[in-house]
Length: 212
Image 1 (cartoon, rainbow, N blue to C red):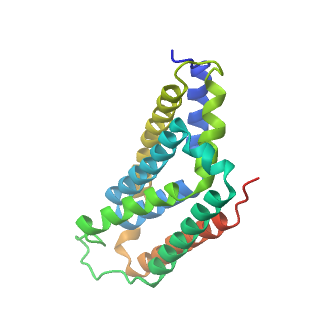
Image 2 (cartoon, rainbow, N blue to C red):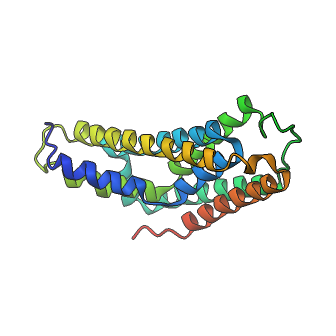
Protein backbone atom coordinates (compact mmCIF):
# COMPACT_ATOMS: atom_id res chain seq x y z
CA UNK A 1 0.00 0.00 0.00
CA UNK A 2 1.54 3.30 -1.19
CA UNK A 3 4.88 1.55 -1.28
CA UNK A 4 4.95 0.95 2.49
CA UNK A 5 6.71 -2.26 3.51
CA UNK A 6 7.46 -4.02 6.82
CA UNK A 7 4.52 -2.33 8.53
CA UNK A 8 4.55 -4.71 11.55
CA UNK A 9 8.24 -3.88 12.11
CA UNK A 10 7.40 -0.18 11.84
CA UNK A 11 4.65 -0.53 14.46
CA UNK A 12 6.90 -2.41 16.87
CA UNK A 13 9.80 -0.01 16.35
CA UNK A 14 7.54 3.00 16.78
CA UNK A 15 6.10 1.56 19.99
CA UNK A 16 9.56 0.95 21.44
CA UNK A 17 10.66 4.45 20.50
CA UNK A 18 7.53 5.98 22.05
CA UNK A 19 7.82 4.16 25.37
CA UNK A 20 11.51 4.97 25.74
CA UNK A 21 11.79 7.57 28.54
CA UNK A 22 13.04 10.95 27.41
CA UNK A 23 12.50 14.71 27.78
CA UNK A 24 8.97 14.53 26.35
CA UNK A 25 8.00 11.92 28.93
CA UNK A 26 9.59 13.97 31.69
CA UNK A 27 7.61 17.03 30.58
CA UNK A 28 4.34 15.08 30.59
CA UNK A 29 5.05 13.58 34.01
CA UNK A 30 5.99 16.98 35.41
CA UNK A 31 2.83 18.64 34.12
CA UNK A 32 0.70 15.73 35.35
CA UNK A 33 2.19 16.00 38.82
CA UNK A 34 1.74 19.76 38.79
CA UNK A 35 -1.74 20.07 37.26
CA UNK A 36 -3.28 16.63 37.34
CA UNK A 37 -4.45 14.58 34.36
CA UNK A 38 -5.68 17.63 32.35
CA UNK A 39 -2.22 19.19 32.46
CA UNK A 40 -0.52 15.95 31.46
CA UNK A 41 -3.02 15.40 28.65
CA UNK A 42 -2.48 18.95 27.36
CA UNK A 43 1.29 18.37 27.39
CA UNK A 44 0.89 15.03 25.58
CA UNK A 45 -1.40 16.48 22.91
CA UNK A 46 0.93 19.44 22.41
CA UNK A 47 3.94 17.17 21.95
CA UNK A 48 1.95 15.03 19.50
CA UNK A 49 0.91 18.13 17.57
CA UNK A 50 4.55 19.16 17.26
CA UNK A 51 5.49 15.68 16.01
CA UNK A 52 2.64 15.77 13.50
CA UNK A 53 4.00 19.03 12.09
CA UNK A 54 7.35 17.33 11.50
CA UNK A 55 5.66 14.28 9.98
CA UNK A 56 3.88 16.55 7.50
CA UNK A 57 7.10 18.44 6.84
CA UNK A 58 8.86 15.17 6.12
CA UNK A 59 6.13 14.24 3.65
CA UNK A 60 6.50 17.44 1.65
CA UNK A 61 10.30 17.61 1.86
CA UNK A 62 10.77 20.48 4.33
CA UNK A 63 12.69 18.27 6.73
CA UNK A 64 15.15 17.42 3.96
CA UNK A 65 15.62 21.13 3.28
CA UNK A 66 16.21 21.77 6.99
CA UNK A 67 18.81 19.02 7.13
CA UNK A 68 20.55 20.11 3.92
CA UNK A 69 20.67 23.84 4.68
CA UNK A 70 23.07 24.83 7.43
CA UNK A 71 21.49 28.29 7.62
CA UNK A 72 17.94 26.99 8.00
CA UNK A 73 19.11 24.47 10.58
CA UNK A 74 20.93 27.15 12.58
CA UNK A 75 17.95 29.53 12.54
CA UNK A 76 15.52 26.90 13.80
CA UNK A 77 18.05 25.65 16.32
CA UNK A 78 18.77 29.04 17.91
CA UNK A 79 15.15 30.18 17.87
CA UNK A 80 14.11 26.94 19.53
CA UNK A 81 16.92 27.07 22.09
CA UNK A 82 16.19 30.68 23.03
CA UNK A 83 12.46 29.97 23.33
CA UNK A 84 12.97 26.97 25.61
CA UNK A 85 15.44 28.77 27.85
CA UNK A 86 13.00 31.69 28.12
CA UNK A 87 10.19 29.32 29.06
CA UNK A 88 12.39 27.62 31.62
CA UNK A 89 13.46 30.84 33.31
CA UNK A 90 9.85 32.06 33.34
CA UNK A 91 8.68 28.79 34.87
CA UNK A 92 11.32 28.93 37.60
CA UNK A 93 10.36 32.50 38.51
CA UNK A 94 6.63 31.74 38.58
CA UNK A 95 5.10 31.43 42.00
CA UNK A 96 2.37 28.89 42.62
CA UNK A 97 -1.08 30.38 43.09
CA UNK A 98 -2.65 30.15 46.54
CA UNK A 99 -5.34 27.46 46.48
CA UNK A 100 -7.51 25.50 48.86
CA UNK A 101 -7.19 21.74 49.19
CA UNK A 102 -10.18 21.23 46.92
CA UNK A 103 -9.18 23.54 44.09
CA UNK A 104 -6.62 22.98 41.35
CA UNK A 105 -3.21 24.61 41.54
CA UNK A 106 -3.68 26.46 38.28
CA UNK A 107 -6.35 28.23 36.26
CA UNK A 108 -7.26 25.46 33.76
CA UNK A 109 -8.71 27.60 30.96
CA UNK A 110 -5.54 29.68 30.74
CA UNK A 111 -2.82 27.26 31.73
CA UNK A 112 -3.88 24.26 29.67
CA UNK A 113 -3.55 26.26 26.45
CA UNK A 114 -0.13 27.41 27.58
CA UNK A 115 0.98 23.86 28.41
CA UNK A 116 -0.28 22.60 25.04
CA UNK A 117 1.60 25.24 23.05
CA UNK A 118 4.75 24.79 25.12
CA UNK A 119 4.71 21.08 24.31
CA UNK A 120 3.99 21.72 20.64
CA UNK A 121 6.63 24.40 20.15
CA UNK A 122 9.20 22.40 22.08
CA UNK A 123 9.04 19.83 19.28
CA UNK A 124 8.29 22.13 16.34
CA UNK A 125 11.38 24.23 17.07
CA UNK A 126 13.61 21.20 17.63
CA UNK A 127 15.47 20.30 14.41
CA UNK A 128 16.45 16.98 15.97
CA UNK A 129 12.81 15.86 15.72
CA UNK A 130 12.79 16.78 12.03
CA UNK A 131 15.94 14.73 11.44
CA UNK A 132 14.40 11.78 13.30
CA UNK A 133 11.36 11.64 11.03
CA UNK A 134 13.52 12.13 7.96
CA UNK A 135 15.76 9.23 9.00
CA UNK A 136 13.10 6.87 10.36
CA UNK A 137 10.16 7.03 7.95
CA UNK A 138 12.03 6.39 4.64
CA UNK A 139 13.21 3.01 5.95
CA UNK A 140 9.66 1.71 5.52
CA UNK A 141 8.85 3.21 2.10
CA UNK A 142 10.03 1.72 -1.18
CA UNK A 143 12.48 3.91 -3.08
CA UNK A 144 10.42 3.57 -6.26
CA UNK A 145 7.03 4.17 -4.60
CA UNK A 146 4.83 6.38 -6.75
CA UNK A 147 3.26 8.17 -3.76
CA UNK A 148 6.12 8.60 -1.33
CA UNK A 149 4.72 11.77 0.20
CA UNK A 150 1.44 10.05 1.07
CA UNK A 151 3.34 7.08 2.45
CA UNK A 152 5.47 9.31 4.67
CA UNK A 153 2.36 11.14 5.87
CA UNK A 154 0.49 7.93 6.67
CA UNK A 155 3.41 6.46 8.58
CA UNK A 156 3.87 9.74 10.45
CA UNK A 157 0.21 9.82 11.46
CA UNK A 158 0.37 6.21 12.66
CA UNK A 159 3.51 6.94 14.67
CA UNK A 160 2.03 10.07 16.26
CA UNK A 161 -1.30 8.38 17.00
CA UNK A 162 0.36 5.47 18.80
CA UNK A 163 2.63 7.87 20.65
CA UNK A 164 -0.33 9.96 21.75
CA UNK A 165 -2.11 6.94 23.22
CA UNK A 166 1.01 6.02 25.16
CA UNK A 167 1.62 9.56 26.39
CA UNK A 168 -1.98 9.94 27.57
CA UNK A 169 -1.53 6.72 29.54
CA UNK A 170 1.63 8.17 31.10
CA UNK A 171 -0.30 11.33 32.00
CA UNK A 172 -3.04 9.35 33.75
CA UNK A 173 -0.56 7.22 35.70
CA UNK A 174 1.59 10.18 36.73
CA UNK A 175 -1.40 12.27 37.78
CA UNK A 176 -2.75 9.44 39.93
CA UNK A 177 0.64 8.78 41.53
CA UNK A 178 1.20 12.47 42.33
CA UNK A 179 -2.28 13.19 43.68
CA UNK A 180 -0.93 13.93 47.15
CA UNK A 181 1.94 16.02 45.83
CA UNK A 182 -0.41 18.70 44.52
CA UNK A 183 -1.62 19.39 48.06
CA UNK A 184 1.76 20.74 49.11
CA UNK A 185 2.58 24.35 48.20
CA UNK A 186 6.29 23.82 48.82
CA UNK A 187 6.39 20.69 46.65
CA UNK A 188 4.54 22.48 43.86
CA UNK A 189 7.05 25.33 44.01
CA UNK A 190 9.89 22.87 43.53
CA UNK A 191 7.91 21.16 40.77
CA UNK A 192 7.75 24.49 38.94
CA UNK A 193 11.51 24.80 39.28
CA UNK A 194 12.07 21.24 38.08
CA UNK A 195 9.96 21.81 34.96
CA UNK A 196 11.77 25.09 34.35
CA UNK A 197 15.11 23.32 34.69
CA UNK A 198 13.97 20.66 32.21
CA UNK A 199 13.01 23.31 29.65
CA UNK A 200 16.35 25.07 30.07
CA UNK A 201 18.14 21.73 29.65
CA UNK A 202 16.23 21.07 26.42
CA UNK A 203 17.13 24.54 25.16
CA UNK A 204 20.82 24.01 25.86
CA UNK A 205 20.72 20.57 24.26
CA UNK A 206 19.14 21.98 21.09
CA UNK A 207 21.74 24.77 21.01
CA UNK A 208 24.49 22.12 20.98
CA UNK A 209 23.04 20.22 18.01
CA UNK A 210 25.17 19.94 14.90
CA UNK A 211 23.97 19.44 11.34
CA UNK A 212 26.32 16.48 10.91
